[in-house]
Length: 228
Image 1 (cartoon, helix red, strand yellow):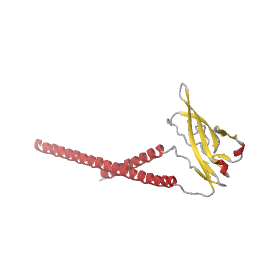
Image 2: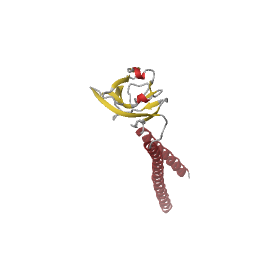
Image 3: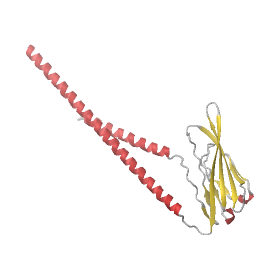
Image 4: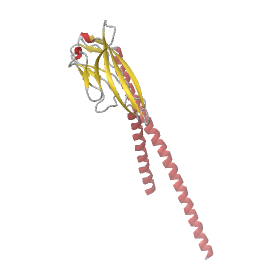
């Protein structure tokens, strides 16, 4: 009886470990995701210019600086408007003075999210924004520089409209959440069945060992009686 109770406790512990590992893998894999920015802003309201560039090697130390460029409608060239180095930001173009705020990675030089808030949006803000990551990967004996670029086309409207892409993105988000929950449920059931099968096998082995010991004891007793 005590052996069975001990086996049940061990099975529960192993099941909890399996669930914890599954959750840890899911959380770690979702640590950084390159999500596209919204592309429609409403005049007079704030808007987040999204820009995310994930490191391919999370264990490698790195530092990065970010530059934002802007090309207004009807213009041919991009103009440098904003920069951030992990500590301080600088608004370079006077058209955006006091209207851009950092909304990306904080308290780190390893920048992966370079999003900025554009305040009090005007129709003149329509155009294409370019986000540039200047990243330095620090290995044991050398450093390697990389550049990642993202483009955000922005349209400014008088009234908010919900695009088809936004609806599809929201649906896909809920589908992903449901799919993840189902996957975790399947993992839990699989772990439980595997642990239960192992527990039953261990109990059968313990019972067989007990019977073998009992049989050996009985034979020894019979031998003693014959000797007497």
